[in-house]
Image (cartoon, rainbow, N blue to C red; front, side, top):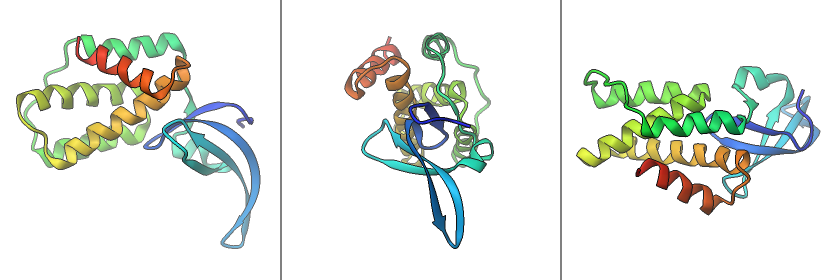
Length: 160
């Protein structure tokens, strides 16, 4: 069980800090909830304490792991066979839902590289922006940066 002040990652939402643990009654059922403030903005999320493992909630990564993640942007990508854009989008969404930080970074790398060859479709553009925001949210907490600093840092690494 997590405690108030713990920094956690919620797949598809990003990283944040547990601000409180409260009992709430929703639809006639009382449960304990983590009240989490996301580092992406002024967003607060309630997460049932009993369902954290089902939702893929995890601790944020250690700084050394974050360094390994960021090294993905300077390494060669595995050339994937040409996949139909809809299939690629579904594959990427499945990867994002796992909350695996390495998979998220690979998605950013591949979509960024693709965007330099030709403009991305709307769904890929949205996915790239969301994947970047999610990675930045964790980068903010892991490296103790402000949002703008983390964004600039990620942009510098991607554009090397």
